[in-house]
Every structure is written in C-alpha cells, then in structure tokens.
Image 1 (cartoon, helix red, strand yellow):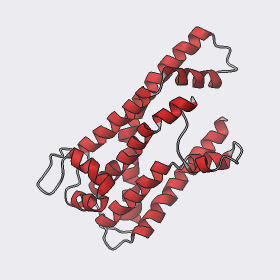
Image 2 (cartoon, one colour; image 1 turned 135 degrees about the horizontal axis):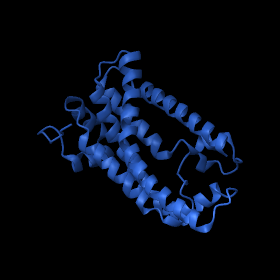
Image 3 (cartoon, one colour; image 1 turned 90 degrees about the vertical axis):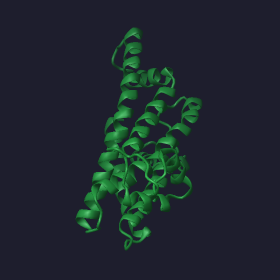
Image 4 (cartoon, helix red, strand yellow; image 1 turned 120 degrees about the vertical axis):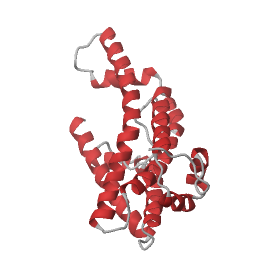
Length: 227
C-alpha cells in the first residue's frame, strides 16, 4: 500500500494537479507504478470534510421529513438528527474507500476479465482513486449550493437541466448522473486506454457510462420505492 514517489511519478500534490491538467500523462505513469494508498486516504478525508461542512440544521430537516408521521417528539428528533449527522460523516469516509474498491473491482472484471485487456487490479484501482478525486472535490464545491438551497441532497446533475420534469423515476435517474461523475467517467476511460493502449477512448468511455447508468437506474429504483 506504500506509494512513496519515484523519479518518474509525482508526489500526491503533484498527482492531484495532474488529474486536472495532464491526466493522460499521469495515467501513463500510474500504469508503471500504480499507487493508490495515500490518494484513497485523501478521498476519505475530503468526503468527511464535505459532510462535516453541512450544517446540522439540514440533517434535522431531513429527519423531520422522514419522521413526519412517526409521532416523535422534538427531543427525539434532535437526537436522531445528531446521530444521523455523525453517522453520515463516518459513512462518507467509509464509502470513500469502499466505493473505490467496488468501482475498481467492476472495471477490472469488465475490462480485464470479460474483455481480455492486459491490466492488473492494482492498475485499475489506481486509476479509479485518482479519477474520484474530481468527484470528492466536486462534492466540496457543491456544499455552498446545498447550504444556500437548504437541501443536503442537491447535486449538479443531468437532472439539474430538466426542471420541467415532475418528481419520479426519470428525474431520479437523471439526478443520479452527476456532472462531476461524468468527468470521473471520462478520466477513468483515459486511464483504461493507458492500461490497454489498443482500446479506444470512445469505447472505454461508452462502457464506463453504461455501468454508471446501471448504477443510476438502481439508485432511481430505490428512490422510487422509498418515496
């Protein structure tokens, strides 16, 4: 799990900058030395900070909406909001790590196992954790929007451009496809083509987006069931 920098690989700050300005070159370097440990730790920290910056009032309001018909008193709601907030902060950190492994495993299975690309799991995991830096930074950028709108579930997504749609499955599906998530998918496609140079970027991006849409369909289905 050690990922101390080598002469051919930038340090963690350098890699974060490279994700934005020269991802292709970065993923070529990561193909030779697929580090991931400290980058994954950074994802965990960024996710925890993002959740911590959301005001407690937003958690309380969400609890009030979900418990509207439960008959809970004010003290119980306040306690549930406090517990929910700290549980959410902890879960965000855990998901930063677990989510990276899940996405890395899916990409490895699809591209290396099913499609026969010459890649190791460590290489795919390295691509994923560096691409997800964009998603975590994007989540931080959206905190002021959540605070001003008073909605902790607000995200910049395809659903943002469809305000004419009524609440329902289609809007939930579009809302599950975040703009920063699409950016991540583009970066992952770039990384996949560096792992397997014979694979086209367009083909890799299409596959990653299909997987993303499958996830969005699942999220929309769950949202429809609980609404």
